[in-house]
Image (cartoon, rainbow, N blue to C red; front, side, top):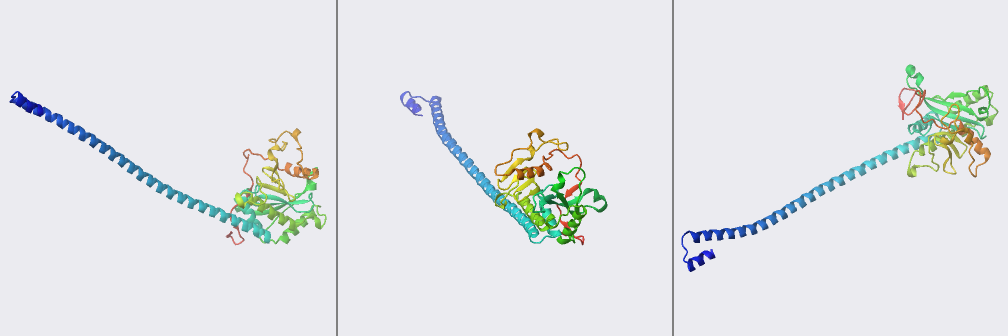
Amino acid sequence: MAISLKGQTWWKWQGVAPGILVNVGTDFLLAAVLFFLERRFTARVVQAGQRAVTEATEQVEARLNLQANALSARLDELQQQIDRRMQDRAQEQDRKIANLGEVASFDTVAEAMTEANRLRAIVWGGVTVPASSDPDGIALTFKWGFDRNKMLTSGPQPRLEIIVSIEADCDLPGPRPYIITQWEPGDSPAEVADRLIQALQNAGRWHGPGTLDWPLALRNLHRALELAVTSRREGEAIGSWRLHGALYELIGEGWAITEAGIENKALGKVVLPESDFPATRHKPWGKPADQWPPEQPESVTSEEWDRVLRHGERRLPVDHGPLATSPIWTPWTQRIPSANGHASA
């Protein structure tokens, strides 16, 4: 435009030329303005887009945080519910085992053994305990379960069996008497003890009042079930002695035969793992017999160690392979049927 005006003034341009120059100048000026406006517009659009993305991201993060907090609260509540259920179950187990310690009866023994069976804290529904002050005297195996062979005729009917083990008979050649009785729902402890004494007399194994200490057997049964059940727990719920496997047998005050091996209370550990026991004709999965017997631990007498090894050899090593057939005896884990046909707690 300035050139057009100068041209008209200096060279007296007229007509098309000045108009063209005006249009060209206008175009250049407009282009500059548009370029400037476009840069500012683009910058504002970018800033607006960034703000929108930032706001959207913050909103998503806020929602995610709310959802995460809500989920965390629900999970915390769920964990509290699980903890309460575990605590309630442990208290129920303790109550039933404590009942056995207070009053021995068919119901208290069956209820306590049912809790142990549910945890698989004892092996195949049975546990063996000393029944004499003589360490080589009588032991009793209490078994609570049912016989699968009789299910077709009467359905699963649990039985509380008591089997007598006589240490002196274990090393004798030839057949040995098989002494067993059944604790019926209506039997008192004294009636069961009387049947055991008669069975021992009939087998020629009764040697006076010291032969069978029935109250000691019941105390040891309570101790064994309490130990087996609390050993399945964690944290403060564990007792003073924790076993590392399901319990087969208590020996004296401080020894146990479990699926983990020979365990000792004072040492608080598995003294001899079950996998270290030797192979036999009936248990070929053990170690070579030339590596047996192992050395006794310190602070353990040779007599005590020999006795514990003998008990362990009868049960270990454990066969970890698949069962060839279904077991006939099955531990009872359900509610206990009463005489009137209703289940007790």
